[in-house]
Every structure is written in C-alpha cells, then in structure tokens.
Length: 533
Image 1 (cartoon, helix red, strand yellow):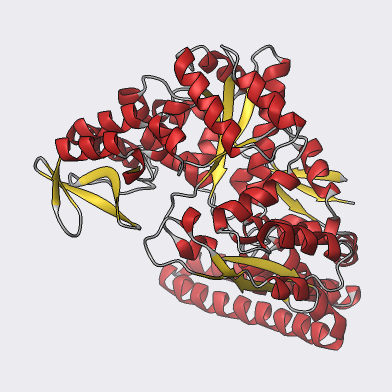
Image 2 (cartoon, one colour; image 1 turned 180 degrees about the vertical axis):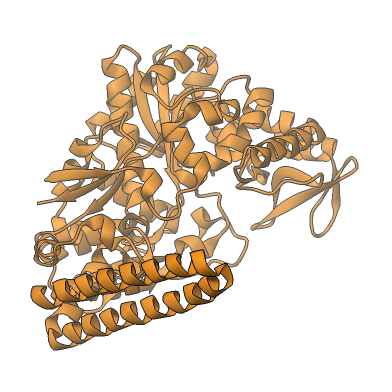
C-alpha cells in the first residue's frame, strides 16, 4: 500500500493536551515525566526494574494466560524472564469482534516499538492488557460492521451479563455471527473473516476469552503477550501498590485535585473529575463492581462503610476483590510490569497526565507515553471515487452535509461554475467599494449598508448551493457515491478506526491486512496515515 500523512492535531476531536504532547512537549512537560520518544523509553528502562522473585511470578502467570501461543510467544516469555528486559504495554476493552480497528493499531504499535527498542539494545516485550475487569458491558457488547449495501451496521451480542459485572466473566449467549456474516456479503475476504469470528466466539466464549482468541490468531508471529488482571497469580503482584493506595487515599486525592487545577490553569482539561471524596478504588460485592467513595477515614459502598484496615484485610485475603478505578489502573499495571513505554490514544494520554501524580507517589517512576498509530484505509473503489471528484481524504473527514456539498460543487459544469464564481467576486468587490464610500460620508449609513451587503452575499451563496444541489440531483449516481465514501471513510461522522470493527477490515482486505499495517507503523511518527492501494 501507499500512504499520505495528516497531522493528528488536525483530526476532529483531538484536544490540545494530546496535540501538544505530540508536537509541543515543552508546553506539557510538567504533566509527564518523559517526552514521547524511544530515546526517552530507553532512559526510562533503567528505572523499570523488578525483583527476581516478582519477575519469575509475572512470567509464570503470563505463561499460564498465553499457553495457546506460538513459538514467538514463548520467545517473548523467555526474553521477559531475563533481568533487564522491559515491557511496551498497551491495552483496550475486550470489544465484540475485536472492537474498533484502532485496537489492532495499538497492539501493533506496541509490537513495533518493542522491536525497535530491542534493536537499539534495550530488550523489550510487547504486552496487551485485556480490560476484563471493566464493568461497562454496554461498551463491549456490540461492534460496527461495514455492509456494502447498507453502510455501518450495529451488531449487538446477547449475553448473560448484568450491569456492574466485570465483562471478562460475562458469557455470550448469542454473538450474532449470522448478522456479521450478512454484513460481509460481497466483500472479497468474507469467508476468512467469518471463520475467524466463529473460531473466537462460536462456542459460547465470554467477551474476554473470545477477544483474546481472536487477537492471538490475528497477531500470531508478533510475540505479543496478553494479560488479564482477573487471575489470582497476576493480582497477587498488585497487592503492594493497592495497599499503599488505600493507606494514602487522602493524600492521593489531594494531589489529583491540585493536578486538575494545574491542567485547567494551563488551558487543558481534566479527563476524570476528582473531588475530596474520590477513593480511586472499587470493590466487588458479589459479582458487582462498585465504586467506593471516601468520607473522613471511611470508604463507602452502596451498602456499608469500610475502614482502611478492612480494605487492606480484604485485599490481602482475596486480591481479586479490590479493584482500581480508571486513574489508578495504569499505575497498578506498571507496578507489576517493567514498563518502559505505554502506547496510548488521545483519551488515555489525558488520563495519564492526571495519573502521573500517582506514579510519582506510588511507584517513583513512570513509563514514556507514546501515541498509537492511527490510520484511515482506502480500498480501490474509494480511491477511484476520490479521484473522480477531485477530493482528498481530509475533505471527507467532515460532517456529511459539508462533504456532500463538496461533491455537489464538483458537478457544476465548469463554465457555469466559473461564471458564478466571477459574478460573486465582482458583486462582492463592488459592494465593498460602496460600503467604503459610505463610511467616508456617514459611518452610520455604512454600518446599515454592511448588514445589507451580508444579506446579498448570503443570497448569492444560497443560489450557488441551489445550483450545486440541482447538479447533484441530475447526477443520480453522485449521491450514492457520496454515501459510499462517507460510510467507509467517516462512518457515523467519526474516524474510520473508531467505528469499523477489526474483522470488517479483514473481510475487505484479508488477513494480510495485519502485516501491511505492521509494516506501515513508524514508532516515532505520530501522524495519521491514509493508506491506499
């Protein structure tokens, strides 16, 4: 595939904090320990040390969770067992059918960064954190699949889960694979994508197990290790940092409140609102994961109050019962892993600007935050349509009515288009001359005329729009072309990578798509890439 690049800062919805992390680190350096570079990750590696017993227990737990892996997985485990090996970590919620495509891009970014660190002399292994402990079932129980006939289609699995239950333990009663198969109709690699879906989810697997099965297949030969926090051997390694977080909860909440104020003073935003009652902890009461609030020296659930000693006792007796909230979760992760670099998307990078104060107090170290790779992928038909209408992908990443207007304007016959443009320019120029003359005579009259001038210019633009819409109406195929481009490039008025599920891209491009994306990732390039055949 060939590619062109767009700065991520120019993409819709990118907030200033992430944009400055990528391109103006001096503005945000107070919120992160390291600049986003592999050289910084090599420096951070010197602080990412593990005691030998801890490292052995970690490798044993990961070996158990990755027992279905190939030879590359075993090589990664062997490498991680060696003193001095660090981790490039990433992770995501365990979405149906692999979740949105950016999930794959995150995993492959971790793979490529680990490869590059190893090449530079810092042995590294990629690790993917499966967010099986997350309790937001509505985030993972569906996927968007692309249909040639109908555009993006929402597929929602039926499951045995109830609100508040950790999604990793939720069984899928019906993954709606027949709906996915119908969406794939007419796509060149539909059979391969459906086979992958059935092998991952066809036997009643839960969200966590199905997700891991799918990515183990997609990412075979990459050596990436999967880590689920809902396993006793893993959670035993987190007891020290969670115990510390319980005992220092007031101090940590105060530090986060001050960090939030610092972010706002610098013109940025708090990804998570923190107040004095924030505890950073959650508790499993039965199967339900419940946020704890803090009041004086107590931690409050919906049913009872716990002292700090109560929580520590419960944690030490059954580590799986005490769970971190969003800001504490990455710190818990990196307390058990020798993480030198963390691959993050825009929202996660914002979380980490807040979590940095927890890293400082609980770990006295923090990994480098590196941006995940970002892609829009064109098929041959989309590329030809862009060429036909003289459009760029950047122009398509816009609200649909704006995008349709661009196509409509391209259909106006050139002589008429030129005449309309010349007329608008000429009339606009004469009106400005009249307004300037009136201003010299009487500024009040000029102000009144200025309002009239804007109305005239509005009517001229409106007439131009009517001409474009009529051209669109006469070219009956143009509307279908506009819909097709929008549905593929900017579905649901969102970036392609945030909507289309991974298996939709496999259905269109085939399993080789994974290797093509891997080859396109440049670990120190933060631009959004547009790939096309």
